Amino acid sequence: MNTIIMTGGTFGLGEVAAQRLSASPDTRLIIGGRETRLPLELARLDSIKQFARQVLDTLGKTKINALVLNAGLSFPTAARSMDGYETTFAVNHLGHYLLLRLLAPSLARNAIVVLTTSNTHDPMFSPVAPFPFVDARQLAYYNLEKGSHGSIAFESGFRAYATSKLCNLLTARAFAASTEVNARRLRVIAYNPGYTPGTGLGRNLPAGALPGPAMALSPYFAEVMRIQAGEVLADLALGRIVPPKGRLYASLVRGELTWPEPSELAQSDKVAQQL
Ligand SMILES: NC(=O)c1ccc[n+]([C@@H]2O[C@H](COP(=O)([O-])OP(=O)(O)OC[C@H]3O[C@@H](n4cnc5c(N)ncnc54)[C@H](OP(=O)(O)O)[C@@H]3O)[C@@H](O)[C@H]2O)c1
Image (cartoon, rainbow, N blue to C red; front, side):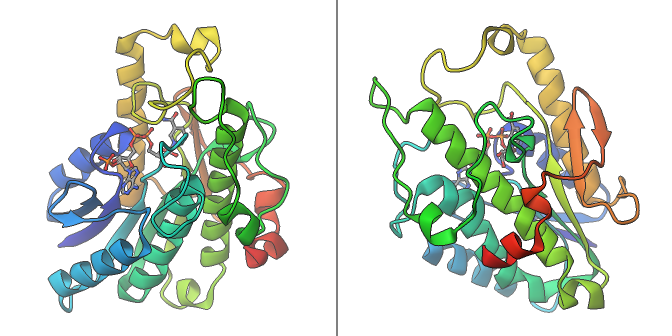
C-alpha cells in the first residue's frame, strides 16, 4: 500500500493531482484541507499540529510513502494569520515547514516529498521580484500594502507570494541536504507547475492586475494546463517521473518539464540556514 499525505488537494491543480493519486493502484491518499475529513488550516499552527497528530494516529505503524505539500494562496483576504503572521508567509511557507518537520520522522525509506513552489521565486521570471532576503522575522511581520479598492496592492501581494515560493525552494534544498534525508534515501522535489490559469490562486487579485494575453486564454486551454500541471504533480509523487541525478527543481513551463537550476538566492545554503 502506497500511503500519501497531501495538502492543497481540494481545488485547482491539486484537485487533478489528488484524483490521479487516488486512482493509482494500492494507494491510500489522505488530504488535509479546510473542508476535508481531517481538517487542516495552514494559517493556524495549532491546526497543523492537530492534523499531524490525527494523521499519525490514523496511520499507526504505517509509514508515509509520499508527502505532497501543494496548498498555497496569494493576495490573502486576511493580512494576518491566526497566529499574527503575514498570511502568505504563514500558509505557503511556515505552515508547510512545520508540517514537514512533524511528519518527516514517519516518512518511509525511499519516500518522496514534493513541495509546490513557483518560478516566480526567480526575479528572472517573476513580474514582481521576491525580496532579496529571507529574514524570517521580517517576512513574518511584513505589512501587506492595500491598493485603491481595499484589496492587497499588486506589487506588495505579489512580492510576498514570490518570496514565499522562494522559501519553499530553500526548504526543499535544506531538507534534501539533511542527514535524515540521506540516511533514509528520501527524494525531495520542488515543483513549479508554471503559470496555470483556471485555478483559484488568482481569485483575490486586484481587478485588471494581470496582463492582457494571460486573461485572454480560452477556458479550454486553461483546463488543459490545469490538468497537465496536476498530472505532473501526481507523477512526481508516485515516482513515475524521476529527477536527473543531482537535480531537485522540476519546472513545467508551456507544457515542457525541465530540471533547471533555481535562482541564485534559492541556491544559497547560507540563506537557507538563515531562514
Ligand atoms: N496557478 C498558478 O499559476 C501557479 C503557478 C505556480 C505555482 N502555483 C502553486 O501551485 C499550488 C496550487 O495552486 P493552485 O493554482 O491550484 O491554487 P488554488 O486553486 O487556489 O488551490 C489552492 C489549494 O490550497 C488550499 N489552501 C489554500 N489556503 C489554505 C489554508 N489556509 N489551509 C489549508 N489549505 C489551503 C486550497 O484549499 P481550500 O479548498 O481549503 O481552499 C486549495 O486546495 C500553490 O502552491 C501555488 O502557489 C500555482
